[in-house]
Image (tube, rainbow, N blue to C red; front, side, top):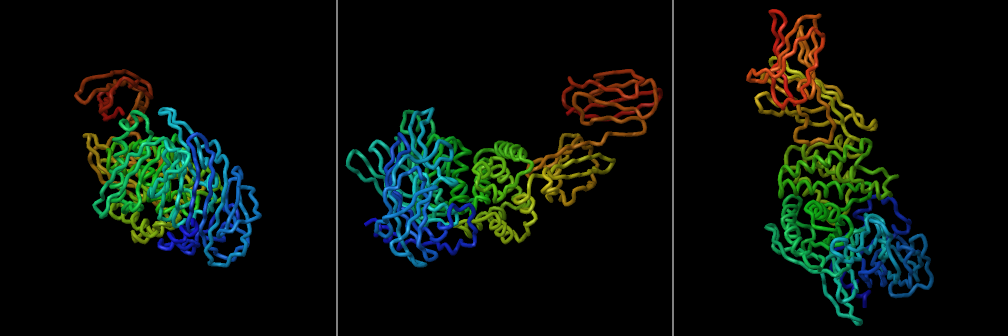
Length: 630
């Protein structure tokens, strides 16, 4: 009956052929036998409690043979006990289960293009005691709720169901049945098709998803939950979208968090306008709470530890970048994490304030700059390391900075968001690489961004600038030197804004293109300038040092200017009796000194920020310079 049910429901579901994504070369595949078939459907039926990671049940895998198969291979943690294995309803008498792989021979070898169903019964304690455990059981320290939940990314789906962990092979659909005690609720992907009452005071939650889904995005979460659901309407869609939240059913939680949960509606509206309409709108979006110390973007039902604005924004953005379009390999995790991180910035920019968005980007840059050697693209030899895949500095923050710089280089928000929407449209329900995004960017913009990806995506580090500037009577002159933080990428071509702070309190900005390691820039500008600010709006990931050439004439030099706690005056000629006076702009004398030394240092620690006049008198001669306390 189960096998018939699977075949019946899939007869009306459009399937994504493995051939459509076969151009992607899978890396870090546990066994080559996993590449011999294409998964169409996962049917997972498990009994789960909220007190441990002990599970019992079975997994059905509906698949198509891509070549003749005389041995089938699935992944399942050897910590779980396999009870029996079936293929097309026939029990397999002999199988092996070692090194997290189940291997068995079909009763009759499978022909190429043949459709088959495998079922694996198993039980045991799943997972491991770490953040990346496939299944975990923990108690929320603040609220006391006990939760069993899954987190399969990147390599731990086999901790709780028999599977094929190959990113390029999305299942076309999934059914997840979870049996629990009647006081518990069980959340998962898709829509809740029904809740069945079972003997022994148990209930079975039947979740059904009919969108293509990567193996690591399947999930379950079990606890004493309260269901807080509501609907939202998008102007671009005829039907409302269900927002379903499984939150802790404890006094005070709902009241303290309702306002934050409700912000999900604003975020969905925002991303639907910026990226494309919410991709899983025929099912739902929702959250399951779990004490995981963060969040995981399980398709249609994120698992998270709380409803902080940035966390909710990040995980929701993943429904487009990571779920609808999934990275084709872990080397291209930027497709997931770089864009979802930038979703936080976009949410702050649109729904909070410019100040909060700018602070976020400043902090992102600070963390990204802590990795002077790293690339956003992950080398193949590192793509099996969870710590490297999920590097906060590189995959998340530098990844977000890269998206921000693309927006800056385009210089047209309409074109930028058109590019994101086109990418979503072209790779919906499938997988993509960073190179795929580059191709869409080139096509949509009509501009060649290959150079940009060579330095920012595949290259390492970031640019370091040194600016030395001075002003003549009618111009501002700037010497620019650039080097890379990594010898692997010694130069970064980039546009760059330069801000000039004027003596009268105003400012102006102009844009240059840095296309050489050493440049000289001259700008016709007669108004007095007190400071130069490279990249004042923080578009570019870089480190900059700014030097103002000392004010010099035949008689004296003043440095630094602007000055801090000290102001140095160097006399170009010999010993003389000099009166040195520092005044404010009204002419009030602040300090007066008499000296015959060749250099005089004034202690300016107690001066407030602003403009001052320095006057030097020697005999009948007088010299005046305007200086700035920063």
